[in-house]
Image (cartoon, rainbow, N blue to C red; front, side, top):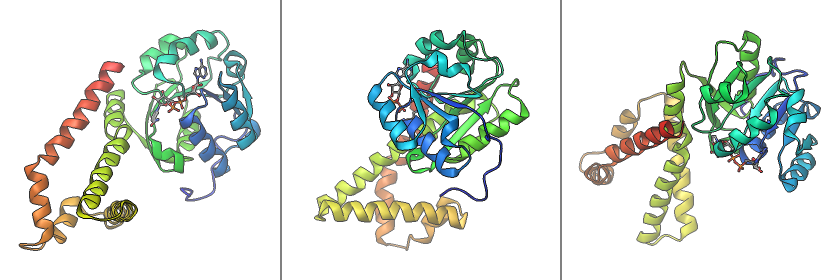
Length: 278
Ligand code: NAD
């Protein structure tokens, strides 16, 4: 669990409404309810998909509805968790019922605060970028807020985002696009690297499940070591690179293949794409 201490009371009694109750909404609901910061009776899931509604109300004992407009009406915190291309039609449905005091939290990739302000006619907006480890309460979620968000609502946003991982407050929206590239697209980039390592193991002759286990535990251990030691990765790398050894041979090939610049280009490509979508 990511809980360091008892939950604060920022979300006590607040009505939390999710518009769009797919994969990410489910992860957020799970973290939020398990943390004890919110009771099931405070939470409403909205989704046109009846299977999703039944699944979520059974799993979390929350209320579920297909009626966005009704649900949005009483919301203290409205979480926009639909696909970016669905946002505009969702706005049309709730513009007239949403309260001016409501805190709107959007996780839609590439959708700007300006578009939300304009589309919904609201001022108190948080834009957040979680990532898929939210599914196991290990999201790293970047966020930023409009000046109209009150101090109390800022506290609510921070507490909400901490229930499914860690949060990092960024000073401006441009950095949110940067986070979309680095931490939003990052998990897929990591999975590709894991896949390449697993395949290499199979190529040498390991059974696939052995190769997978060796790879994933190597990655997990390396991440935990870097976090625990606080050392820069280059120091940890040099520590295990003996003169004329096997690691040096591997690192030489990665450098020759342009690994650093390939990764840099990939992150920049995701950043540019995120700016294009917004
Ligand atoms: P998803 O497809 O699992 O969920 C979207 C849900 O919205 C579906 O259940 C769908 O039925 C519902 N929906 C469709 N039309 C609707 C409407 N008019 N009103 C209410 N609900 C409606 O998608 P997801 O992966 O949960 O992503 C949701 C958002 O989160 C996206 O905007 C995405 O950019 C953002 N996001 C995703 C990730 C990720 O890693 N998946 C990370 C950060 C942000």
